[in-house]
Amino acid sequence: MPIHLIWGDDYEATNREISETTHRVVDPSWKSFNYSQIDGNDPKQNFRALEEVQSAPLGNGGRVVLVRRSPFCNGCSVELAKKLEQAIKLIPDNTHLILNNSNKPDKRLKTTKLIEKSIQADPYSKERSFLLPLPWDINGQRNLVKNILYKLNLKMNHEAIDLIVESIGNDSSLINTELQKLSLLSEAVSKNLDTDRPREISKELVKQLIQNNSTNALEIANLLLKGEIFIALNKIQSLLKNGEPALRLIITLTGQSRGWLWVHLLDSQGTQDVKEIAKLSGIANPKRIFVIRKQIQGKSLETLLELMKKLLKIEASIKSGVNPIDSFKDNLLTDSKILTNN
Image (cartoon, rainbow, N blue to C red; front, side, top):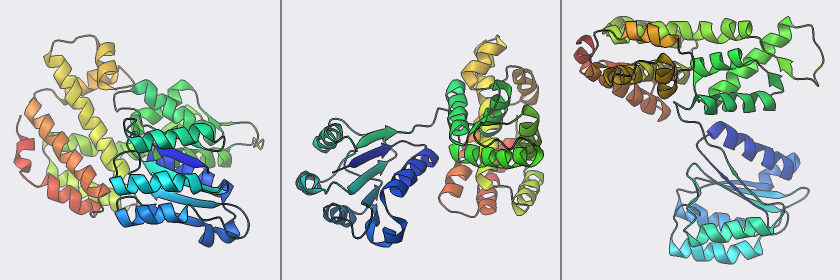
């Protein structure tokens, strides 16, 4: 009765873990019969999942029942908990139940204790967590890049890794995408055909691909800071039409805005040491503090907070499925006059 408890807010890593488990268990020829994905937000589907997980697979391979947004370790009804307690004893050895949720399991719940006890008793069961580092956790972000490099059989020196961190932050999906692009670019220019050894990605190659992509976004951030909203919107629209991923653009903008806000706050509190400011504000390169101080000179805390608030609303709007350019227009043009004030 293998149970896989997979949780955390790193959706790229959790999806990769789920995909690898499914690929290992389910025979592709029988996937339509032996693979089910359940929406844990729907109570009826949760009961269906517990019915399906009691069934042995058809044909070759095993069966996987995946419950996305699983409620079993984060609060479920008494009826569902009772059903789990009955079903968990009846899961066949070659049927795998995958429980996935972005939140940490609540260890106080009876259902969580039951699941964790079952995992400990079964050598094929497991619990794995995938958490994104906080925006100001630079070492955590570096480790995130290193982990993805390892999975892609790539390597970088610490300077190249810091460029990735500065350009992308803690978005593991974008990091994975950009590192795959860098791998292909490196393969095209390299004569090394040894696929067993990790391919080294140079700092220069990172600059060529990633930093060039973020240059226009940083220009847009400066326009927003100056209150030149319409010019910024024109550039945003042009970037999006040319294929710039909307989420990468907004992440660069929020990263820049967050840096401005932190430096302003720390300066106003009398913090002078640029290394200390860089550490507290999550900026990998302390030399950037001098540039940021010039950029925000004369700007009020209210102006920076308002810009940050708008960018976070845009990010949430895009992630909820709203057309990106509409998200930018709706939020930046609403009471945008505050951005022109000091």
